[in-house]
Length: 271
Image (tube, rainbow, N blue to C red; front, side, top):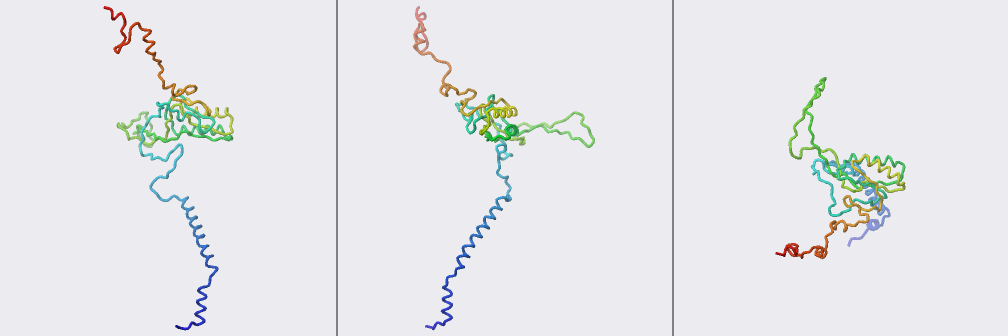
């Protein structure tokens, strides 16, 4: 075995020595990397990456739906089975409900009604709830004017139009709308505000909207169609209106007797 020199022992002890700077450097390195990663993530969050698809955004007046995909005109929901969904105030204290007839309301009319309420209630502490959203696209196909005027030419009062073909699928997108069924609540309000002020705000909003509207409170009776369930239950509405007389009363009132074919009187039996 070869003899070990003092320099060899010194090198061996230096290799086994524990350095205090090594764990500090290792603990500081991942912290710096994580901070750099978070900064890069924040930058990417506010920068929209290149994409050929439209951003997925939407509000209650303009949904995130494809405008190029045609939609059926459709009809508002009719509660034929006795449903009272959407006819009562749920989140707020007061509401605005339509009472005349179902229809389709455009997003422009809804926005105008919302702005009217906000202007009337300016300075008040409240929260406005919207019970409906625009999810129906309206497509219009009208006649286009084919008359073109040259520079300096005056209009003679006669316009010619293109002849539009028959069939569907030829219209272009016009606006967003919502289907409003009869007796449904459109707006609700909750807050530290007087009832008369809310009544006035809803009155002004109803003037901007098509149809007839009424002011309702939380706890009012629900409505089935145009019938309020105030003292009336769904079982009463489902019962037949015409009361059928019992067989005993009909037999006692008639002089004849009942058979499968009908009533046989005593006069018919006599020769």
